[in-house]
Image (cartoon, rainbow, N blue to C red; front, side, top):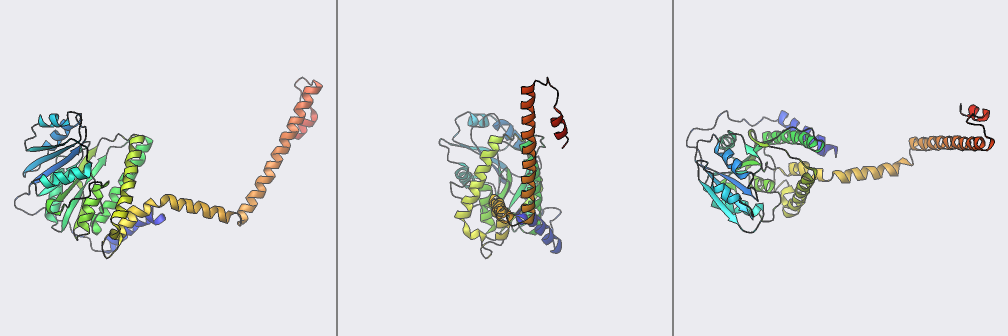
Length: 355
């Protein structure tokens, strides 16, 4: 457990310290900019879709752009509101009457997209104007990379559940940065990441954590997956406990689904980053089991410990003394009631109270 939460990040830092770091070019190569396709999968987002499209229109990217918007079983006016917006580049709106899930929608969008690079996002977050530039620049400067994850910036919160997530997310970004320097990250931020269209392979329609399965599929084929901290998406952070519980349950279920669906990804001769997948994902899942085992061992060993025996005898002695004092106090109170001492403490009670 100590390795999963503290040792693994330290190991990454040591490996990056002793190994020559991979040089990140200062600028991308000259030449034609590749075309990009923004891909959004939404469900009943009529209240936010206009702002989201206008946010993408603010992108500084100078190459050709398009937006592929999949309305997955929307029962509101998401599609009509999207058609009313002119962002300055083509919008392709795909309406699915039945909600088929995000994975199926991503497969459809990737198949119909015309961009050389696919940039995935969500309806809730917003991109920084330079986000697309940074993602594409990192891919152009690293030919062996199939995908690059952006950085999700979560607004600070004083709310207790959200404050814990803030801390977790800062640690998570640091780990991703170290893994990217070493070789590859094992998953991307679903709110902002880019992948070359030729490196996108369709995933099963029931996939729960597409932002891990898609880049991992590229990684096991020998490609790299990077992390670019300057490609930023902003999250408004509305961390409601019930919503966070559902999200965490889905993520945990997705990790187990991936474990049983792709067991070969844990094997070092099948996946060069298999040890990172075990360290970062699956050892953490065993946290409750480790704690339960520690508790069971403590209970089993406690009876044989001299400290336990001393504490038990001391506790018994104190308990008996307190009980005796309580019995004497109750006896004196009964004496007052019977003798009519009118609230005056008997001499016996006064002496015993000094014990």
